[in-house]
Image 1 (cartoon, rainbow, N blue to C red):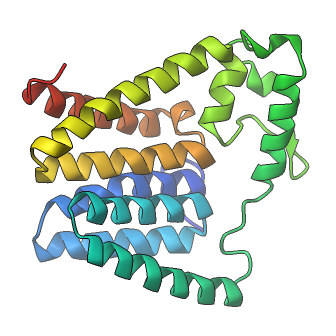
Image 2: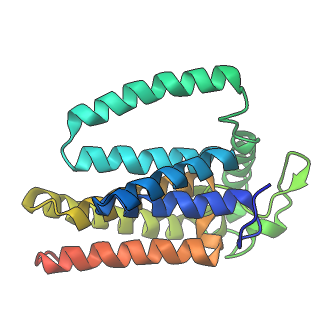
Length: 227
């Protein structure tokens, strides 16, 4: 059992995973130790999405840093180790019914009259979805819940914002890959991965991290004179 301030071990491990790339900003030994401790906490929490977020942040850090050989090495060796872990512990990467829930959401969204404008913000919890015999208050996928609540207009706004942000980040990447840029970009990509398997925008501390990451990236972009 995990004791935390978010009331749920998955949310606690989500919080740890999305913050983990910050340790990569510093070279001192204590930050490396702290990074390893965070990884151990994520493993012990046994939350698949948190594990994927942690690994995604690390791999993106290597890739954006230009450490392609290290990226390939950790990707291949990590894949082998992960395969061995899954062979021993078959439920290690369990999706806990998420895929079946997402299929229900997509079918309901496409097959009803509310598909264009959505059911209204906050309406998902009242829609009667269930997963694993329990009522689903969240879709565990922000990219499904946002259009379900806000419809196609909200989805267009989301995709447009992310496309515009990453379009400008590419320019910064070509100009200068600073440590801050590398860390915040890899951390934000990890945050987007979290949005695919959890509901960080519904939990204030997790939502705040996303806002801070976006604000930091926007500051880096504006400092390079890119609008």
